[in-house]
Every structure is written in C-alpha cells, then in structure tokens.
Length: 275
Image 1 (tube, rainbow, N blue to C red):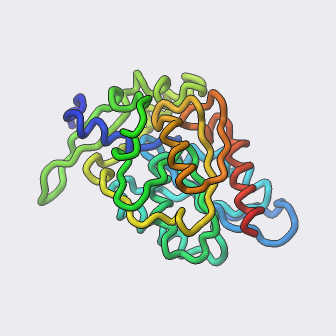
Image 2 (cartoon, rainbow, N blue to C red):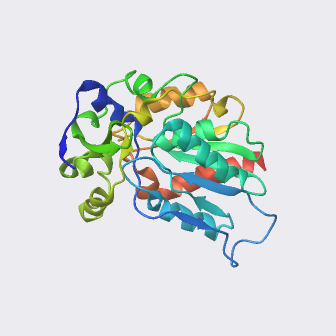
C-alpha cells in the first residue's frame, strides 16, 4: 500500500484523536511477592494509537510490585464505539473493583467504557482526551493551539471489503521523536516509530457518548511539554471533569514512559480515595 501525505486538513486534524505508547499487550495477576493486605482493585491500562500496551511496561511493574492486579488490553483502534465496547467487555470480565486508566485516545475510550460498569471506581487520565457527550478530539484539540501532530501525519490507504477504502494514520518516523517522545532516547523512539500501530482516521473521529467522569471521580496527569495534546487543552478537560491533577514539568506526551512514578502515584491516590 502506498504511503502518502495527509488527505487534507480534515484528515490531518483527525490525527489528534490518537495517542502513543510502545509494543506488547499485558494481562497478568499480582505477583505472589506483592504487598500483603486486603485485595486491591484491578488496574486496567488503555493505550492510544501509534503504539501498543508496552508503553505501560514501567507502570505495570511498579503496580504489580505494590500488589495491584494489572491488565493492559490491546485497544483495537478502529472506532470509538467499538473500541469502548471492547474495553467495557474486559472490565465486565473482572470480578471486583477496577481503576480504569487511559492514555491519549485511550482517555476517550475509558470515558465511554466505564459507563454502566458498577465495578469501575475511578478514572485516571494520562495526557489524555476526556470528552463530553457529542465531542470529538477535533472539537477539543481546536480549542487551543500547540499540537505538532497534524504536520507529522502520514496516511496509508487500506481496502475494506464491500466499502470504500479506509485511511490509517501514522506518524512520520523522521518526526516521531520530536513530536511524541522528545524526553526518551532516540534509539528507543526509533523502535517505537517502526512498530507504531495505526488508527483509522474515519473510525476514530466519532463523537463521544455520555462521559463517565460526570459520575466517577477522576485523576489527571498533564505533561507540560506535550506536543500532541496541548497542555492547555488538558487543563480545560481536567478542570471541567473536576479531576485531581498533577502537572509534570518538561514531560512529553509519553509521560508514562519517561516519568512512570508520577502516573503510579496518581493511580495509588485514586485507590486510596475510593477504597
């Protein structure tokens, strides 16, 4: 399939729906050597686009060491409704309380996946979108300037049986480091760029349903050097949701990779507040 530049302003902007992490899904119970005490909630970590669940690796290890069961499912990255339904089904399979965590586009997914799931006790947004009903990432991203994502987007056409061709969004590998993960070593981001998973531009631009943050407590991690979702956009969403927020000075969009200890602290804060 031919790789080409963006299909135009609208499709380029659609890239703002996406998020990033690294390269292998995880699903695992807490280790036998975990901290003793009452059972802890399962932490479900939802990645965004341009990568996969391995972006949570450091977060997973720290949580497991602290006695938390962790699941980091593979987000399908095809359509907000379908992706949310998939993650919701994962949550439904968990016997006991859940803390649902989303990075970037994964924030949109958890906002919808938590709806109607009584075992979800808290939401944690990590450099993530937290839309209100009917909003898309395009609506939110356009509120404030600062994203470097549109000009870095590459689009690949793919066939859809019985339908028009679809369009997957990728990040230009030459720009990947500076736009998405400027606080990680270039050798690391070269691998991430090569392994990035695409997201369907058409499928990932649909409006959100009723947001779970209106009925659930939420926490937010805002990296101040995020070149994907401008920090001003994240502050707007966090304030609107009433989230308990921490800002990480100088951190990139992949703050869970460069500063995992901050993300873990927010997850633990959510646990303590809802236990």
